[in-house]
Length: 199
Image (spheres, rainbow, N blue to C red):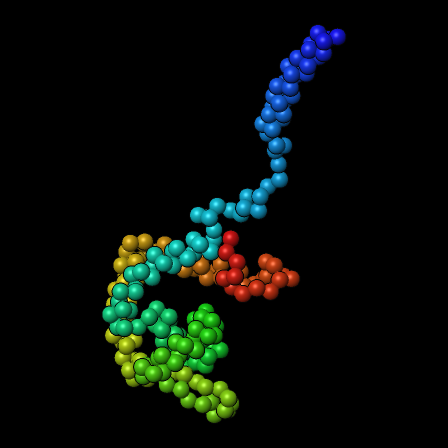
């Protein structure tokens, strides 16, 4: 009887390592593969993102102009506003928002700076007393005249480096892209501001 109990205890002891071995084997089993795609897999490669490609090209071009603008103590955004006013002759804030693609708060800050520096002036519209019309002062016009030769020289070098015909074709294609994108809403039921989503 005693001998039988000893054999039973030994048998139980011998089986215990096997159970632990099975437990470890089950723990090492790989989880079932999830074939569902992640949200990132639906996005195109970042290097081929259209908004980023356009932004990189813009930065490559603008770096040639920034040094000249710094020499005249004017920022890129300030120059953009002055060029828009110079091109239009006169413009109100709504015109400048549309022409410069600057947000209202940023544009207001730039206009205050240009007004304080004496580069622009305001007058009240005779037909609408609530509307302010902006134009360049003599100082603003002089800044345009001073920067024009340098700007023309930079444009000439860009045309020489890239190719004049290719540059014309690029500007035509960009204008066509802009017209095409403005002709419809890709997300017709969604209102969103330009620049909110970059894919």
